[in-house]
Image 1: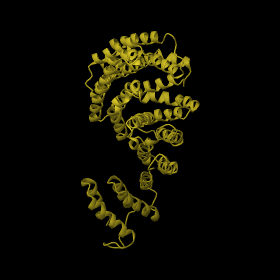
Image 2: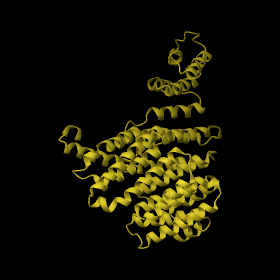
Image 3: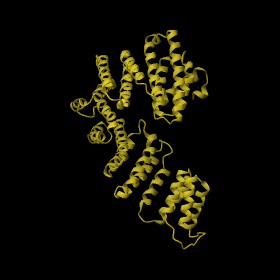
Length: 446
């Protein structure tokens, strides 16, 4: 009988056949009740409950999965990997339906921790720790927004710790979760814990995921998570770390509203370092160069340093990237620079400047459609943020009606990709409501 059920489940998996899944489920239920259409005395493996539950989950049949898991726990089978897999199914089944229900969230986290605590003590079950960490991270993603980060810290820190204990082979995944945990500490205002965590995260990432170290170094500089002397010593080890140090030191000052008077001078000297780096470094570091140029260009635009922004933009075009996403991001920078040059005229609402700005917004709207077709959420977010920044100066009572279409497009795509940029989404909806109000369309406005 086990063989028949296994064959039905295999057919369900290979052909996505709902009929085979239903047949396997019915055989399992009847065997569980001792009413098998085969020999009632024939042995029946409890593992099949879990295999059927897993397949039902994959095929979008949570009710079948739930029933199989309940049957599994009632028969109290032997302690094998299937116990961990059953808890993993249960965790997926109880995923919170919204971020408003913290009780559901905590219950779900408890199920994931049961899997991890079960598997961490037995090397042959270590794969369950990895699987649980991936599914856990998918579950918590909607909670990565202001006001919720603190609820992730306890479970995420335990998962990071257990992955380290089990000597997980996928070091890059471990490094990614470490960076996410660091972000949770910072967003929750727990800076001391963030600094302490960096003492273990930094050497791990430097050794096992060096391509992520620049990201960590940026965070440590910007949020002062390491002794300033140590950071200064470390930046001497490479040109790119020196560039990152100066960029993020300026960001740190900007965050505190304490920009030095010579900020533009610092930007220019940082660009000179970057220019030298561009000419000295091998082609393999092209991705690093792109990242640094984008970062410096965005900061220069924020600080209204037109010369450096223009130089970065020129260098980005010279790299001649074939990545369509990067080309759209370069286009966004170009539009931002164009808008910066209009800024003084926009402030006094010169007609020609307003018309030019509206034309840039139209071009950005077309770029957004290309980004949507590309399907890269990061590129979509870059275009939406740029578009919002360019719309801001025109959100006046007598001008904002021109922005209905671009703002609607931003709102719709951010909703579609389930964006975590909650503040931006709220701001866009507020402005759209004002536009509806202006036109006496009170129902849509509400």
